[in-house]
Length: 396
Image 1 (cartoon, helix red, strand yellow):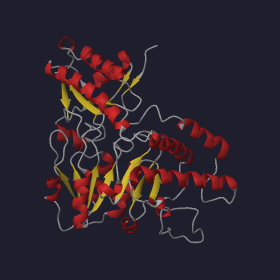
Image 2: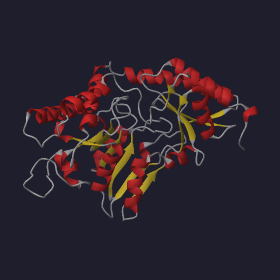
Image 3: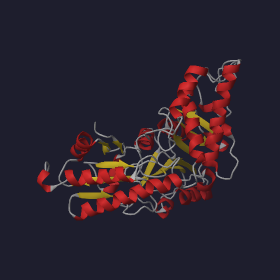
Image 4: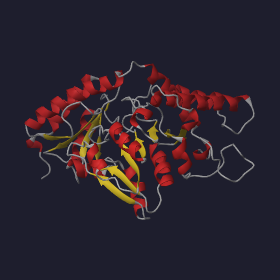
């Protein structure tokens, strides 16, 4: 049987942190209760688990600052988190800035709001995905209400200057919303240090937790300005039909994914036990090794390497364009012949591909995680070399 090599960690991590699946199973078989709804021991136990998970999120993103766990709001993924923040904050006539590298989790809500009177400016990034904070500053206007920005590109791995942009926003009283989908659990992300008013995260990527988990941390001031996206039962203030105005209930209508949160709790506990910087160091070591092999193949005229050539200011994401094969064909053959799982196409980020010069064909993306090995990175590079030969040319 062909060995499977999973290099699609930027989409969802696999395998998950040790004990994560068991934690989901235990919750469903030993607890199974709802939170804020029952006056019995099982419900209190579930409530304690959710609270403890909020505390772990604060530890991960709080740095040295004390963060109130009530400021942690759970959603089903970072897309929902960003929709809550973007659609709840912006009104017709407001102006918002984004980078040209954004994922559709940011762009689709904003384009929708643009049709309703919100003005949107895309700050152009360089051809390697990098952003100059001065280009952000130059586009700030009197009515600029927010900057919404990803921390690192899901297409090429380039890390954007969050702290510098956050400082610009703080100095001008502009809200700063940071998308950490590609960095949470991998790179250190201190919400206070980057000056974020809200930090959105997802559980199923670098946090090594289950799908269907995510959330955001929000400052009290921004929470007061943000209209809830969903209204409904919270288990609190049940005597009124008005939405509670306190956190986290203001944004947590309906039943949470409690089995998922149980798994996320286990994953976060494991992550926080790892030596600081060890996960990023491992992933970047694999990335550097793979990049060197891709540079050799680029020199042979087999592929085009996209994004930064080094590992400074980047994550473990590498995109290539094969020169003698359609990207979709390469991804298919990598899986069929070598058991290598990658991501191909637009990666839900058409604006990023236009910036990187890979529109409309897209790229084949290799993304490394903590449980990948150098041997797997080597095998992937060798497979690309074997497949992307001039004699195998199948497209113009």
